[in-house]
Figure (cartoon, rainbow, N blue to C red):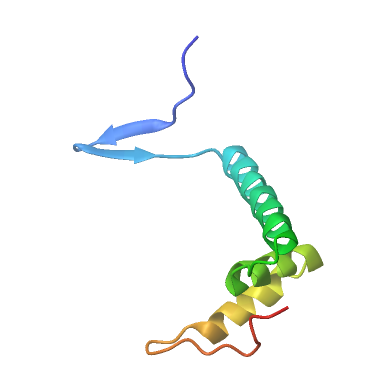
Length: 88
């Protein structure tokens, strides 16, 4: 059985394509891992990074468009400006 690799070599450069299904599975696994980490950090009374907490809360609410508009707000050359405190 041949491995399913989507690679092609052009002019001594390797370009790889990852199937969308694999990206979807990887992102779901990452989200589950972050939620698990948040659970255990919270139960041990440690602080969870505010950016990660914000992403997870937006994913939980189902409002990904909100996250996109907030990201544009945070882009700055000098210093980041945060509208909310990191404490939840």
